[in-house]
Amino acid sequence: MVLKLLNSDNPIIIVGDSMVDMIIRGGHLLTMRGSGVGYIEDGAIAIEDGRIIAVGKSGDVESKVGGAEDRMYAHGKIVMPGLINAHVHTYMTIARGLCQDVPEIEWMIKTVSPLTKHLTPELTVKSSRLAVLEGVKTGTTLFSDYGPYMMEINSGVHSKMGVRALTCTPISEVKSLVGQSPYEPYQFDLELGERRIKEAMQLIEKWHNWGNGRIRCCLGPVAADMLTKETLLKVKEVAEELNLPIHFHLAQGGREAIQIKLKYNTTTVKYLESIGFLSEKVMGVHCHGASDEELKIMVSRRVKMVSCPTAIALIDGLISPLNQYIQLGGMACIGSDQANGNNSVNMFNEMRMAAILNKVKHKDPTVLPAWKILRLATIEGAQCIGFGDLVGSLEEGKRADIIILNLKKPNLTPVIDRPIRNITFNLVHSANGSEVETVIIDGKVVVENGVYKVMSEEGIIEDAQKASNKLMDMAAEDYVNSNPLIMKYARENLI
Image (cartoon, rainbow, N blue to C red; front, side):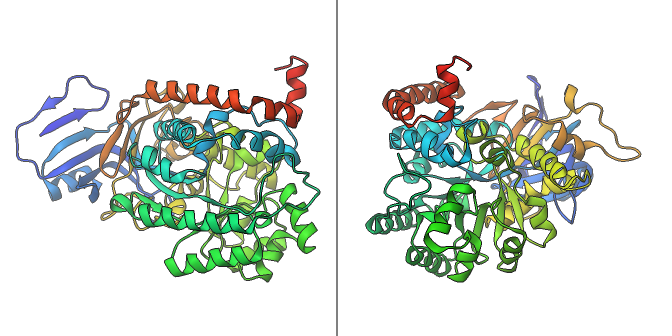
């Protein structure tokens, strides 16, 4: 039996019988059980075969399970469920910083599409590894990953890097957005839609419920403006037959709104409601283009809303209606979107931005209190994306996805327990992810003393830089010719 003091080079060796794989004891536990953060002082967690078998006060857990192969003493630290990034495009991380400060109407067409047309499986795998490295080192244990070449990403990234993931491959019928005017109808290729559904089914067949549920799959129709009615309804039919979520960009901005108006003379939500697409299977991402009336329709259909606060603020200059949706009775969670849109794969950034932006939007500092934000990034996120049976809270029977943060940092000091505890507020409004010392996924330590243990951090970063260089060699001319506003800053030597 080994008693491991976190951040100690000299573990204390204790002779005795081992009963379980691991006990984490002595920490401030945020279990997310009940209606708040489920705080337990001097708490402990026992783990066996990747599963949590006991949670409670340290003495009670020790009495119940006895000894352990590995003990982590977490005094002065927060022990909580891993964070859940409910919407991320890991494949575009190598384009970080190339898609900012442009009008929303040209963001996809003029900054993103000229790059994505040159992506290859090799480049996306290296990009995805960088995103996962950034995310897992800042406490994210579950990535709801949406993107092309997901077969290769699952094989080379999610299954190899020890993380949990919900994955899908995009289903679209649009031929190309390169050079496309947002004011002209998109050109559809119906055979392309059929191929994309076939690819989605192949991904599901190979990866769904892989590794004790560490990887699951869903269906990823891109958006209402990029698919025909027939294909959207085909996706819904498959989702219902296989009992899978539908990961779907919904009411996501001006470009989509223009296309839906051109084709159907209505709005996105009203169109989807009219064809019977909306249901509890739908994870509606963004939703900032929905009116009050349309949000109510979504709630009535039990759509789960996924808010990406930083990305939408940077790309659209808007605040997604996260608090409003929750107040209407809807289920919601948060994600980071893509690093070429928000520059980050860090859920601590998203938690803080979600809280602050919604307070500003409603001119009400009581909106989305810190305890609620933490729940959106843990248990409620898990429930929204279909992992609530496995993770999101520290409870007996759930998989052991756990993060440990050091409170003895300048930005998290002091720790106050009277007249109230300040830990929850400081996690949301002061933490930045660098405080994460230990990350455990499925009972395995993947980050220890702040260092990622499964692959070489230096190697991942070096490979991502080389991949980015290669992408720019291929895409630079198309990017310049598309002439986004950001090129003006470059020509004037402002950036």
